[in-house]
Image (cartoon, rainbow over all chains, first blue to last red):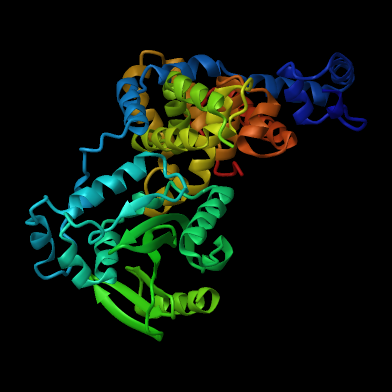
Amino acid sequence: MSNWRDQGPVTDEQLVAYLDGMLDDDTAANVEREVKLDRKLEARLDLLRRGDRQFEEAYGALLTEAPEKKLQEILKRVKEPPPEVVPPELTRPAPRVVGGPAQIRSEPWGGWRVLAAAIVLLAVFAGGLFSSRLLELPGSQPQMASDTWTKKGWRAAVAEYQSLFITQTLENTGKDAQQRAEGMRAVSEYLGLDLTAEKVTVGPLQLKRANVLKFGGKKLVQVAYLADGKTPVSFCIIKGKRKPHDLKQEQRLGLNIVYWDSDDFGFMVIGDVPKSELDRIARTLQQRVS
Amino acid sequence: MMGDGSHEIVSAEIGAYLTRLWRYGLVLSGDRDAAEDLVQATCVRALERAHQFREGTRLDRWLFSILNSIWKNELRSQKIRTGAGFVSAEEALIADGAAEVETNIFARQVLAEVQALPEVQRETVFLVYAEGLTYKEAAETLDVPVGTIMSRLAAARAKLGELNQEGAPGKRRTGQDR
């Protein structure tokens, strides 16, 4: 490592590299020469030498304490997500909804919430790929109580779906800019609407992933974010003829929603963030996307 | 785009490195639960990004750099916010390790001394001297220049040398470490 060779005084860095055997022969010989000529340098070398320890042995003791079995189980879970395991957070009753969860759970097929939770869980454990996934929201299949859900509308279905999201659903996804761009390209093609990562990214939202969905036979896209790294927020777009209107606000399942329509698309932004903040985000998205 | 070969390698071999990853997580966080979280997050991220792993390079180095990045960019700030770990890293690591390590008073003393160093020195000492990374590998893992690795080691060695000189290693902490 001759590039460390120093023409001036020998530094502590060089002395340590010398002690660590990281210098080439010439530089090491130079250091030795200098040390012999300079008592202060020799004292310095002694001090740094005394700073050596049996590090490998000392830290080796910690290795024996690692909970190896538990770590292997963690890896197994990460590799092969068991779909039947639904964490309690995902099945908890949604806040501030009158009769909502109980009613949903009593549906004959067992409740879409459980299925959605399993799908979300799968997505989480599958490694959070930023790829478009084809998921079915309630109302898209006849056996999924479609009448009830299509009557409730797409915003109700999205709100139910969104209420299942927690920080952990998204925190390990969407780190790769290229994957985010590809995900956005996929949902753009699906909807026939120009959506890029740049267009849909509004501070303080961090873009996490995009999902291709379907509701009542209509194409639906969810762009998922974390606000300030912790609060799940979604920007959802449904395709279909609509009567255009400007931003409106509502609240479902304790989540704030700002929604608007253009001729061909319905838009909504949803999340547990203050109304004014959500309104600002929606306004920006409306300008960029509609 | 996906390198199937590298994905197979990562998936097949990652299991062999879990305890070392946990130890690195413990050294960084000083907290066993955080160390487990770090291992889990590292596994998720490594499998997600297996295509980025270059066949023929060292998997353990690649995994260390992932764990380090997760700690620096995500978990550390979380722990500081919640007031857990980090500050008490020295105490936590030693207290946790005490049961097993106390039979080896020497090892315990070394751990205490290193844990008392500033975090950047601690992690560098660990990677180079305990894990055996070259200066260059440590620089890549920590995403800093080689010169930074060298100055951190020099500062750490000087500090540890002073402790040795005084004959009371691990007992003294001046607060002037930075």
